[in-house]
Image: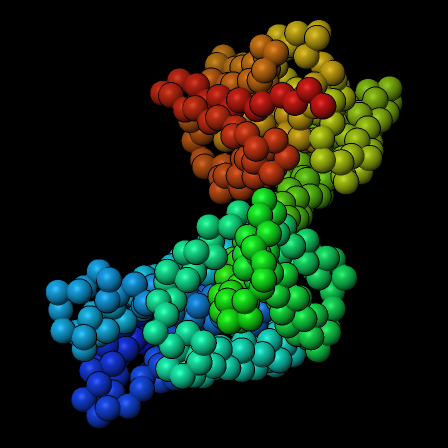
Length: 461
């Protein structure tokens, strides 16, 4: 049933449920903190499951969402002081749930793993469920302890927001938390600790970091030294430091996760595009239409009895396939190599089309050392006779030129009587993907009533 509900409506429903629980608990005279915490964790898990997010991200999201929700919820009475207490709490809870739900969904949607299926996700959640247990225990433990200290402990009668502001006013402790969190997350991701080691290391790290920062704030370091050290102030600052340190650590982890996930998405996309392009070039190597036409031409030459011409044709055909195999795994080749290959390819085409096809080159000498995607020029030239009619009276004219920045391939448009055997545009799309991945640049495709032009960026390296 929940799967059929859209994520926006799900967030609205949980926000209303939070508000309803708040009002119901107020009327019954019971505390709502643990129920609201459970609802918030449930919403977080559902959103992460829908966006195909890993258990690590989900666990950190549970911790961060509850801490941020706790802090924002504490601001409600300040903003809504004109409302009755129950209304303050209900409105604040509703607004915070909406904000956190949309923020989490946007982040998860932006950085979800590309190409991960339901089966892989299920295996991941079964394998790393310890992260979720750790997050749930941590959050519930924090809420129980926070409720205790704010009612009977060292924070009784103390405004937690004011105490947090005072803690954040110490720049040295904040810089230490940020730097230590970045270093810890980076080291942890490089060493790939198991779940048990990671949990123990994280708890120890946050505890030590919180105590160190509490000492810095309590003593007013580094520019002052307020002595003697008050035990009550140290305990208060330790708890605040733990909250702040956990928040900064969670944000650092999520940002690191997001950056790594974005790199993974780009890498996977490049691999896919490169595989598609290699498939396209391989398909060109064994293109049945090209082979059929080439063998027919060779058969005609043999029948005419010209051994030298047949031998030359075979050598040109072999040169084409040798070039394709030689550069199959190359990401970029020099324009000089590509032009030589294209000329060899054109010489075969012109034996077939004779006076019905002309290829003109206007390439600057200094541009021949630039780089382009292998077989791109050959593909564009081959598209000319594939999609246009050719005749001696109205020849197809293909022009190849460069201007230092780009390579331009254009041809006049001559409608065919029968459509081309292939006009899916996949070849152009593969070339476009290659340039996006390798150079972050776009190819330009321009079509008018009379001409068709493709512009390829030239790379210097």
